[in-house]
Each structure stands twice: as C-alpha cells, then as structure tokens.
Length: 142
Image 1: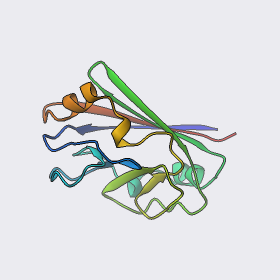
Image 2: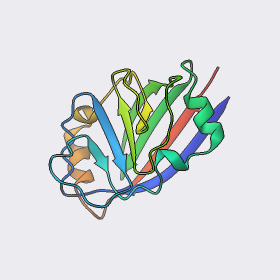
Image 3: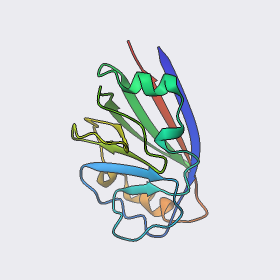
C-alpha cells in the first residue's frame, strides 16, 4: 500500500541546518538561530492534520517513510520507518529522527539523514524567505 502527502513551506534567513540527528518542518513562521534542525517554516500542515490512513500506515514498523524536499532545482530525500508508538498528534511540527525516540511531533524514526546532511548550496537557498519549498511524504507498506 502506498500513500502520498504533499504540502508547501517556505524558507527563512535563520535556517542553519546543523542538527546531527533530526530535521524538522514547522507551521510557525518565526525561527530563531537556535532552531538548528528546522529546515522549513510556514508549512501548510502539521502531523495532526494528516489523514487517518496515513497515521495507521505510520504506526506500522514495516512502513518505509520518505521525506522529500524540493526547492528550485534542488531535491533532498530522507528515508526512515514507521513505529507502533507514533501518535501524530502535534499540529505544529514534523520531526524526522535518526533515533528511535517517539513523541507527538515525530514523523518517522531511524532516518538515514538529518539536517546537517543537507548540501550547503541547498541550505543557502532555504535561507531565502521567498523560497517556496515543496514537501512530499511517501508511506510504503508491504
């Protein structure tokens, strides 16, 4: 079974993309330099707004979840998996984690990349508040 979600977000001058274990999108428009895992702001959706089918797929450990970010000619992809403890209750943030930690903000666990892995050229593009970021989430359950 395959489910796809698409939404838009924006860039921000304070995007640093330095976090070694997570990356995050937020519906909030404000970002301080301390938010070094945040890679997009003003997102059109948080986890709580996703459909019940998506939430069910995310709760299956065998579900492969792909987060794809496109900005201009750049594409960055992160792959992780679902977990039975994922709740998708947060209305503001989506956090992809390299670890197995879960909370209401966790999008996926055991990711292959984090914010620090985004190429410098793309980070510079993400720092422009005029940049429109296209995010696609793909859930693949065998």
